[in-house]
Length: 258
Ligand SMILES: [Mn+2]
Image (tube, rainbow, N blue to C red):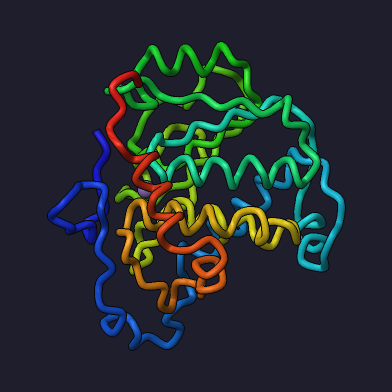
């Protein structure tokens, strides 16, 4: 079972998080230095994403990140998103980012965990291993100490999440970036968006609405986009809050068949 971050106190739903007062953590000298996650985790995740892409420099930041990247590759990549709006939005942002960076979409596989299972179930581990990925992204799934995500030597696994987890509560051999230690806790979709955003100039146009979708899915349809959360007013105006929230409702509605 997932453990939700301690600040997820919304009484209506375990998936619903409440944004606490921002005042309590505004007193530090660098109040937002580690928001929405630790800087070194975000930078490591960016380097990780670039590593197996076929990047084309589109910006100075992208070029700088490319220099940081020690290698590039085009190999099978597995995305394992949670099935709610936040998880699926996170997965879509990542998938689109990888394609923008040059990874052929035919090399990107998505695996959805069976209802009632988690990524650590032997059956899921077997199913994911059979897909023979070199790289695995586990998105919004919660985490715990476990065997490697897949039973494949030399694979690379990156966990992007915001559910509460201690530093050592991740699968063996995986990397992680988590928002859980950086209140107000961002959603997995927003964290993924903010990681990917500098990597390609088209990500904002293509994916900003997904960051909003996932965030409204977990934090509520009336969520106020106030600092340190980015200003998404232009997205709400363009797509309208109603249409975005209607989409959240459709995705998060109970499904009997999955
Ligand atoms: Mn989530």
